[in-house]
Length: 250
Image (cartoon, rainbow, N blue to C red; front, side):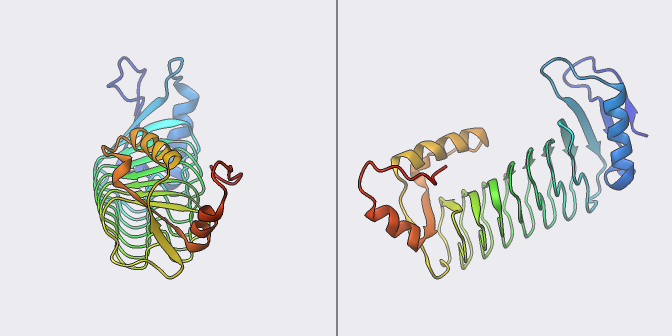
């Protein structure tokens, strides 16, 4: 069992996970013991540290606890998949499938990520402060994805809802088969998928994106970004009388 102690300062974790406790039953038992034996200060979250991670696959999956997790090292594939409530900060790189199926919480990766960032996520915030691979945000149904660097091909493929923000460039076929999801990009796209267009931001979108960038701790001016949406949605917006409110806008 990982070592636990009463928290004496903000720098002291409530639990230190060993390498053998990053996944499966060992992880759940360690967290269950933490929540049973240690209570957070009022208005604070319990803090968990994970060190010597050695690029393990399937680490920290399915976290339903409202805790803060600090990871010092690389993680492998499917890190933080199905995250529900935890706030995870990873100071390292991750493999494929980070944040797969997320429904809530927040995951921040201070490194690069492989393919499939945030696939099928429906809530929460997922931020990558390096580059990311192909199929970022594929089939997402909600939530927010931020990538400060470049992404690979098929950005947002099949995304139904949610927001994807890319600070760098993107590969080919951006926005393929997207629904009401919104993609913001600052760099250049190698190519757009058929049926989507690139357009500027309206005032309310600039304000919203500005707030999203602040919340994700990403420096940048919303005016530097463009929006990628289905052509049908773009045409509907153009034909809507000025001042009319779109009830589906979030």
